[in-house]
Length: 248
Image 1 (cartoon, rainbow, N blue to C red):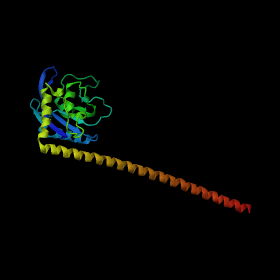
Image 2: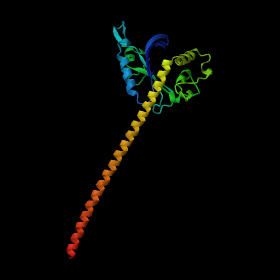
Image 3: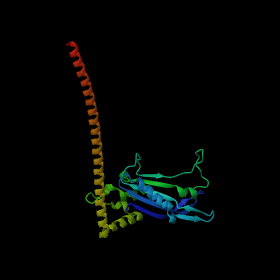
Image 4: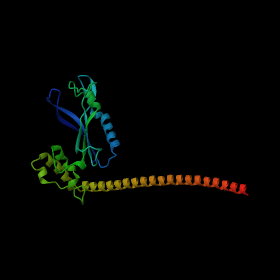
């Protein structure tokens, strides 16, 4: 599963600091390799224009889009970011770069922009610092079984007295009671390995092509240099002939 979109009821603070319930769209995407940007943007675009994500506000007779929070779980590093979980939260500013506190968040602005959470799986550590990092241990590849990469060995202490973690781990454990799902996982892993091999072969071919092009360029330059030397030798030969004639 590389993508899940769902609506979520959350409790947020309004401008006066009071708890209010709101509905948002959470777009959860997972990626193994670092060229998924176009896929992420395409899915976001689909969510922005989906009719079911547009709602009507009667007080001003306008249509707005449900706010979207994008969550990216990546099995690779992102640039020079060193935190396993990075939050990109938007703020409102005036012309003089003063943060606005009145009238925010605005439904129109929230319809056209989004917050984002980036999870870098390789940076997840065994030293858990907060609740988010604890829950995300289900993606920590450091506890995967080497023989079967899609299986993990969880420390019982990680889920002890934690009902949320127990629900997550139990739900994932149920997969192994379903032969059909297990078979799909195995096939997916095999296809992914083939995909990696294809990428490696493609990269090797590209490198070989570039090396051949460089060699062809060097040969062309060498040929040109030899042609220049042949011209110089021909000129020298003509001069020697003239010199011999004049001496005679």
